[in-house]
Image (cartoon, rainbow, N blue to C red; front, side, top):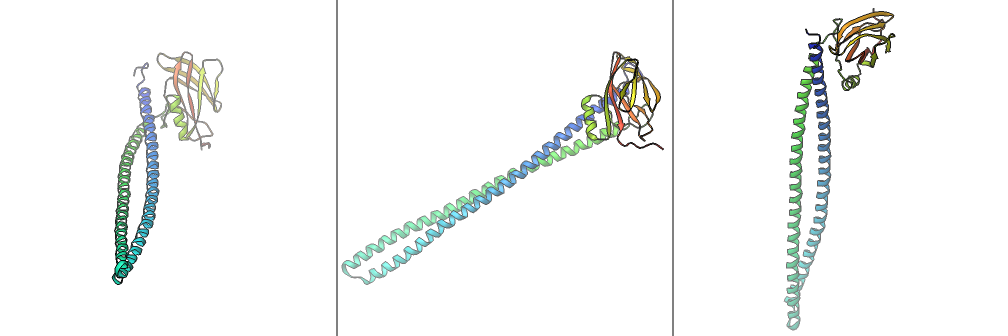
Length: 291
């Protein structure tokens, strides 16, 4: 392997980038899904309320109009019947006036009958409009449900891809041969790891000096930094024991144990500068002494 171009670190960084890209895509898809579901629910509730209100309004107004028309028709029929009886019994001038009155009542009855029929037609038209609005709303809700189903399918696909990527990343091992968790190659990815809540993370920027720098529960002394080859050498002091990590690569998990934890600590250097290294220390959250 060429020290200036360490393949494992590069491959690990690429996988990490894919992982967090998948995480972002999954989160975005879930957010879109929740928004769409909320929109569907709101539209459905609005549609129901609007339809109920329109139906009540149509029924109330039509009921009043039709009842009024029925009463007028019934009253006019009674008056017309009475006028015709009077005309039949009357003679001379009285008969002529009675027939004239009966004719007027007949005309009024025809007019009211027309009004009644128009009221019925209007009632049917309004019911048809409400029904068409309901059909349109149902169609729109159906389209939204189709979109939601598509988003669910996409989320499932993203989740599958994410699980596949995570499975590949879990094969990464630290310098002690212990299976390592996910590693971050920059501050954005480190924030994502923090959100998982599996470990405590301590960022550091250590400059070459005579005295070690304190990071979390350990002290780190930078002995050598080669930015051209992305390699470095450090000395770790943990539990009053010194451990040298010599000629290591960037984004390589450096592992070591401490007495108070069963899981190993991991140190990752993301960047090597002249006489300086930048990275983070990952400490187990569960602190219990190893037996």
